Image (cartoon, rainbow, N blue to C red; front, side):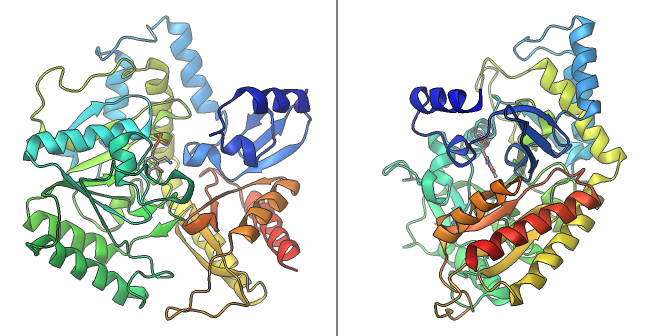
Length: 441
Ligand code: PMP
């Protein structure tokens, strides 16, 4: 039963267990936004496999695609050989790519998880440019392997191990609420761009000649922080003028979540590469690197891996990509997300522990602060990680799964599936509001 399973897990699994520590749930069944434990308790899932489940749990079109593939006798593992499933997935994927990028794009099927795509992107660009350095951003998150971890911006518990960040130059992300320049808003974003440009041109700036810049159009683990579109356009200009390839990490933002199919589309820029994972596999592990053909300088075998063509993931992914497009779920994410963000913002006057509400589409952050502390120059009060942990627990007690992120894990992140119904929106807002009100009363 429930407790025995949790106890065995506690004694046998690595101490790095994270979600399992915060959510003492033993899921037995799940459907759409619902997760049900072996103890029969039901939860609304606003974590969605860290943003993986665009269509929620066990969506009929995903199950049908997996069943059909299993019944067809297709080989489930073929290394990187061509299969009808891979062919269909590639078609579906290319149909979603931003205009100006699709016609010259190449896809590399990576190992099964997002960090593999990030490593492939770095290596590809290092090969293509003959340079080593990586430009990345404070608060960014790109994965757990050495390169991806080094490029991550020190997201609390996942702080890079000392010594591996040597070739990375970390730049200030335009985070208006906690602006690194202390001014916030558009002015802060402009200063971030100016600083970046000057640093790159400063012979004494100590920047390792960059092979690439990697950026999230909306930081996910960093606390659902959207970059202004103008700032994204500035990054495109700055990198293009210096012949630095621009990689967009769409691992968490992709497949409709931010209100566009890919978050990079909001700014209209054309990147040199995009890393995709999570939702593209329709609940199953899949990661790809898509890049401009000019960078295709790898020799055959230059970047391999055993699990790079999972047939079931391709089938589930194709069904997901097609369904999101056919049903206009990106547009729906934009509308529903705006409504949720607006409603949460309106709570700020009655619940002063809510310091900031932000996001794009269904990638929403509610940053919790100490309401009694003095605000800084941007109006931000100090983060309140203790309250955040209590709110997460209080949400769970009310049947709502939410995860934390951002500075010192003080931001409640909402990543509901794109198929969230209007009634579920109300239930999520009610439960979260009640949790924050109770904890901070
Ligand atoms: N990039 C981003 C933006 C992510 O959010 C994540 C995972 N949260 C990763 C990369 C790494 O992906 P994975 O955990 O699948 O390795």
